[in-house]
Amino acid sequence: MSTPIELIESNDPLANPWRVALMRRDSRPAVRESEEKYVMTFPHLIVREVVLFQVVVIALSLGAIFFDAPLESIANPVETPNPAKAPWYFLGLQELLHYFPPIVAGVLMPALVVIGLVVIPYARINLEAGPLWTVESRKRLIAVTSTIAFLILLFGYFQCWPIVVPTAIIGAAMLAARGGQHGSRWRQWLWRVTLPEWIMTWFVVIAALLTIIGTFFRGPGWSWVWPWEDFRS
Image 1 (spheres, rainbow, N blue to C red):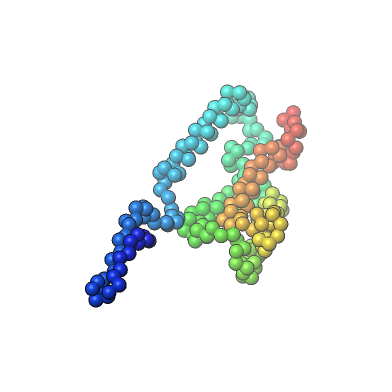
Image 2: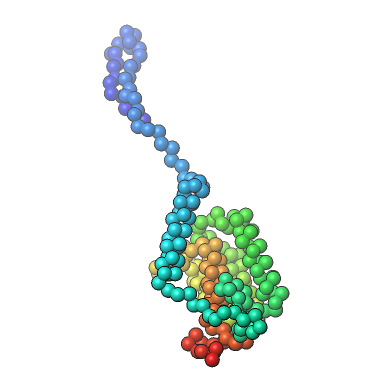
């Protein structure tokens, strides 16, 4: 808003009934402040993906130069190796076959994961950036506790401990985050975690743990072995 720099006023209202004010033009640019929820894919996302892609290619190239690939002998179609392991990206599913029937571990669980990944973008849960326990809701506490208990009982029935243990730990952290905005720094950090981050953490930890176990801790007959044991001799 501009400020008058000169005001001329007559003492006789009949002689000059008007007040004249000279105003200086406002030279400041008009800036409309607005918080954008969405940004363009290019350049905000594409540029970052290209940079990350180049970093990964450089890292893989350096690893291929300085380290030899751990290849074994030439494959023999007559003799099947024991254990016959799938590629590393399928070892998590192969590890699940040790605990569940093939129809559950090979069809039902992967289908549920794919359906979940398809449904998540259409749910409003992905737009809520607030912490999980922002609202002290008794219904939310009951829902979270019931879900954690159901998963622990379900996988515990099949003795699938690589899923039971991370589920119990992450579930305990989720419940400890409730009311953590007034607690220690650790509880405050947990309190700021959103529900999508909790779910993604649970999924990534379980997938990584199953892959690690299938890679380094499974020997002949899919039995448990330690990495330093030479079960091939």
